[in-house]
Length: 262
Ligand code: NAP
Image (cartoon, rainbow, N blue to C red; front, side, top):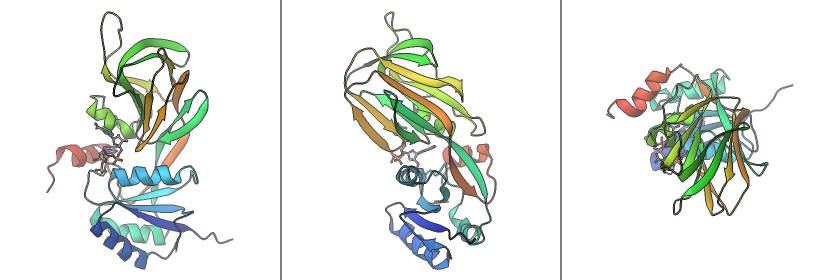
């Protein structure tokens, strides 16, 4: 049986990206389908990839992302703009390799709420949050401050990095818990440094004082008035990133953060 594969292209809002999209569409022989694609080409940076993931992951958990780097940081992008020909031939010939990036799942009062590739953060920008923090069933601390960020290794270079969390080699599958402006006083003693946890752990937060809470996951946000528990873990769901040439983790972080942009 021949399976007809479908693809679509998601671009950042930019004329150059749209021109590249048009040029690629003339050369790709698969069927174009924005409703149910098997492959998604993104033209832009990480923000474009995160947007595509949040749009399609709930429909098709097996989607494969081909990230074509245009402009921005592009930590996730595996194809540089000069490798657009490789991308076209990889798709047309179905010949590429896949890197699996783990997704976080999170639950509010035991109800599944979403996936995140980078991080889930729970915060209150106007007041301090008071939360009991548990790792599995064991209590770690009572936290008070602006919020907490739970990130994957792939997300360690995003919001987590700005919070002075550790940058983690993406070949290590771990959870990272990082404070967002924690108050550390005689009344509330917390770890303060970011905490790395094994991939099978669940981070559970229990509300101590009720109030408005903002939850962000990648580029999405939800507001909650109150909840009893919030749980976040890695659950064997992955994003599939296609690639042609292997790019070492060090190369990825030097081109994203250290090398000067030409
Ligand atoms: P945005 O505010 O427009 O851009 C966020 C920036 O983070 C972009 O430069 C983006 O790269 C970069 N980025 C995203 N994921 C990354 C990763 N894994 N490693 C390194 N850099 C990464 O928002 P957005 O584009 O929709 O992205 C949402 C993400 O923004 C969230 O998941 C969160 O991590 C991040 N964020 C960061 C802060 C902060 O650092 N203070 C605050 C809020 C949110 P491109 O330029 O290639 O798109």
